[in-house]
Length: 290
Image (cartoon, rainbow, N blue to C red; front, top):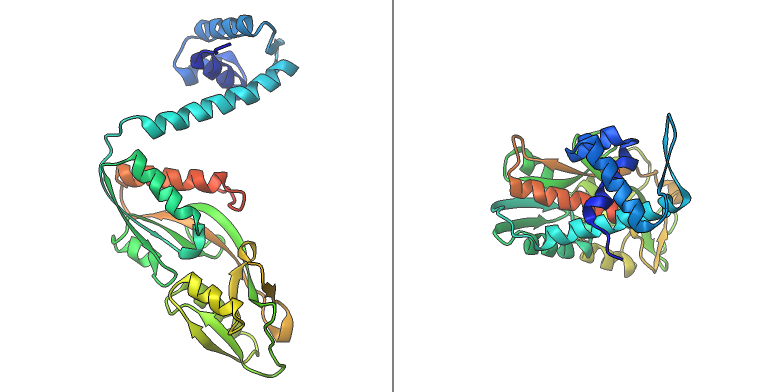
């Protein structure tokens, strides 16, 4: 049995809007046209999907199950349309992102964007060492994902995470000894978070390993050369948490936020931003807070 997508959209709109009148406004149709679409759909299904009362419009048990499938079908159809419809969007997008934001998922997201918008030239800066906020404010980037304390910046919050002190499971830190740290060079925001936290403590520490990329820092930690700060949801096998040991101070929760260059963003930049937000909403480890 093939269902007309227009009928599915009408059914979902009626449910979401809570009635035929508001659904008709959303769909730019008359109320009678929407009512006719719902009747056609129920005739095709062979059972009622909506229970109408004088005050409310409720889903029947079959309607609840049908709604779930209808939403999945429409979402898949929309995704298919976006993927294969010809795009007139062109231009250049300059995008900055911290290396520890999306990890291995970032290349897949960028490839998806490149396929959907072949006329757009993508220029991407991936680093833990760049001050991405300053580059956006200076107009050197069109959009960027930046890391900040909760509530410190405007934009779209893509992910919240808690940092912890981490080291290899075999790492030993003798009492009274200076703590070796693996950190990226300034102006890395993770380095700033670690240094700011330690400034208010009595912990002796020194930078024992410096690397401009996450892989180098993780390798140093796993080799037992130094400790570092790591997002709790990015701890790897072979690592342990040092929080609370030898007076180590607690580390803050941080947000990864999508920010834009001042002024109106170009259509190609808006499309990339939309894709980033969608990826964040669909990832189990990324929190939706738009």
